[in-house]
Length: 182
Image 1: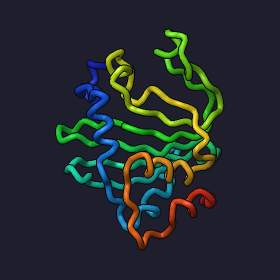
Image 2 (image 1 turned 90 degrees about the vertical axis):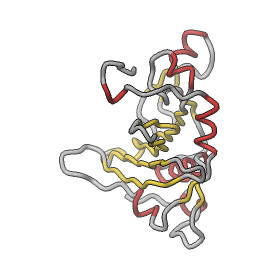
Image 3 (image 1 turned 180 degrees about the horizontal axis):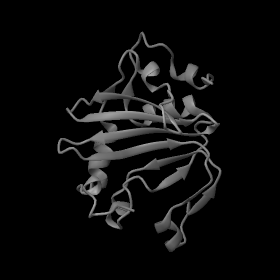
Image 4 (image 1 turned 90 degrees about the horizontal axis):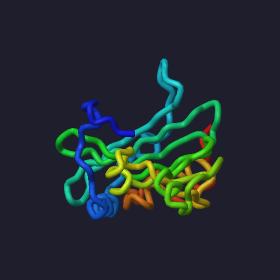
């Protein structure tokens, strides 16, 4: 949950309309996007990570981040983050691998689906309702069959996040769905 006393979490709530507009804003992948998103280990850190930044067509700044646990290739995340002008950062989308159980607390309280799921690939989405209840912006998640590996999750995130891939890019979305760097 967000902690209002911690300056890291002292940010404004985004409403669903703003979230949708930020996700839909056209963004351009850099020429070397695949290289930048390839997770690399860092000393003292359990997960290998990658990242690039991109400006949206409306002038907003975004960061795409990847995280992969080298000991478990199904434990990963591909994240679309909005970097606001005031320094606040909002995870708008997060395509996750398999890492145990996820609970959507509001849906569980209201007896709605999807409330709880276990060991499923899933997509976290920023929502106004979870922020209003004091949770992290991207707490809500839905299981997905749209990908089944790290690069498939990256491709799905880039599609959902309205990214344009340069024509001379290293690989296509179709290529990404079949290759996994190990």
